[in-house]
Image 1 (tube, rainbow, N blue to C red):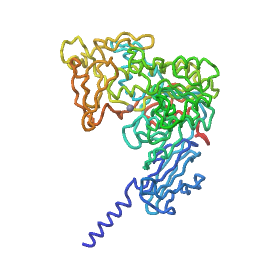
Image 2 (tube, helix red, strand yellow; image 1 turned 180 degrees about the vertical axis):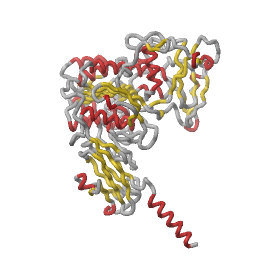
Image 3 (tube, helix red, strand yellow; image 1 turned 90 degrees about the vertical axis):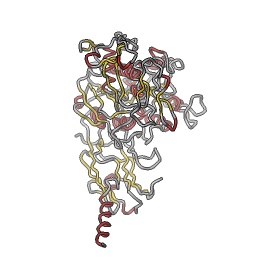
Image 4 (cartoon, protein in one colour; image 1 turned 120 degrees about the horizontal axis):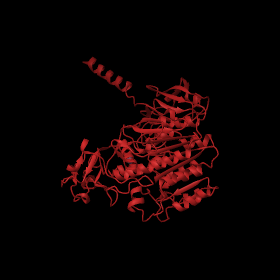
Length: 584
Ligand SMILES: [Zn+2]
């Protein structure tokens, strides 16, 4: 008997000892790829409280402080966690190659491997990265149908984002989940490191402070620290929102808008345009959403930025050849999308009638950035593709996909034939939507579902030809695209575009649940779709399929096959030759 007990005890001891791959956690993570010379914070999280003398870390067998030039800080008890940690901030490795990092607590150890990579010589003068937030294949196909037209299986034109020599599929999963959000996904593009949902420019650690997590260097910081290139960020969402913020931010929580504005100011970004003015204004100013009295508009002005808040101001500031730094804030929150701004004059367009179009913002950014002699990096987000896909409003999302494409066309025109500008167009994640046919009102049935034509009965929609800007003047045509989402709360499917304002599929019900919005119940032929998401979901969600990346210009040849999202960063820094140390 005693042998059996002892045996059990031994089994348990071995189980605890061998365990967890999670017993000691090391950041950057196993299999991290790190640009030579880029900065990062190293953190080791131990499983319990240990003595300082037991906390040992080596890199390729050399003690950490010798390998990285400085000793790490030992924290006996981390905030909110009864466990110890080692932190060493702002270090870098300049020699390309593979590194083995071993962390030990005196009893157990954990080993992770990093790959440090160099870059070749600079190939591109400029890099422009377009992100269609949430853009899936169906958004692109529908945009192509609406803007180019199609008959007998052949398009009458194409998308500027399609007409590029290189294409790849990009995987978007993060450290914590197969499904990503815009924060950790954009962060992979701007740092080359994976992260977790809601996190920007950091590995998400276990302490509650959202601003103390181990950081990885952003593209903006790298550029400003090591080169004279200019940096631009353009979006039609709030500039503090996840995708644009990924260019400068380090936080575990993407909603840290006040700190993100500070990070933008500290970053030295040269052109910044979008919505989100409310977090730049001191608390006592009307419309402010800041928690303090700092006036960031004044701070940017003092820093030499031209400040503009309308399309007219934007154009006149750009016309001045002395304008080299520009802050454009055109809305307190998210700007309005194309359908509401150009056609329906709805949303918040009556309150903010002078919002510029994304295409004009991109042209402006290119004009101002081109005044910088050493080239530039510009990130452009068409952010409302995602904001409209969440509430299942595919028409608005597709109109903003066309807008993204017009902006890409403007960038291609800028790049022209000089072959010094790498342009990449991609998404950060997808939404689950599919084009399955058409809705044909000439089918005389009171039930809308009977008007869906699939396979050969789908035929072709009858949208009017696109106008000069690439948009169809009407979406409520008698034979329109049938596009459906795959993940949703309870909602009424109306089979029609929502011309009275963006769709609100579900509203708050009892017990924190969401129920179908009765507003659409009496739309003729509407059907109730019983949701397949948890009851607490107010709208649709991101999906985990790969996104499409197309590219043209120097460095684009690396865009092929399947890429991890961290490799998009690698393509950018390689094109710009941003690695320190010997070339590889
Ligand atoms: Zn989203």
